[in-house]
Length: 138
Image (cartoon, rainbow, N blue to C red; front, side):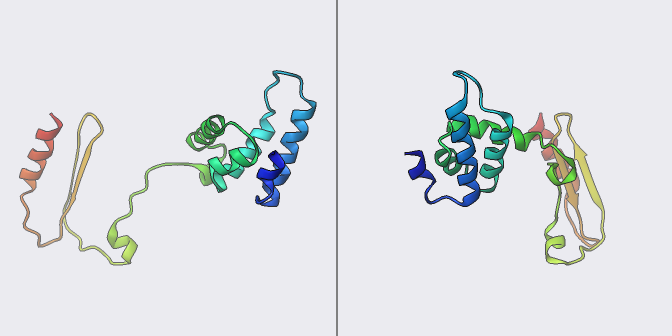
């Protein structure tokens, strides 16, 4: 049955599946799967689908999903795997330079932020916007 599941999968998935099958044939009962086999399965699931890889390798979907989530949450290795907030404005995406004007930033104690960027000639009730933001946070 496991061979049937692997039939339509890429060669890399089949190779990991064969390694897992070899480990299953020779393991001591109750022994957890080696970390390097889990790491290979996680890498495949990150590039494809957790469900597809779990099914193709005959692994527990929930266990593989947790390991993929953990790998994403705490990446091992530098900036390539680092996660964080990156702000990109519409003007930056379109390659348009935004008109220079005042910027008002308000940060609440709970971490909520309001940023208002105004064009040089914009007429806007900034005090009203800030008061509304503060009132909704209270």
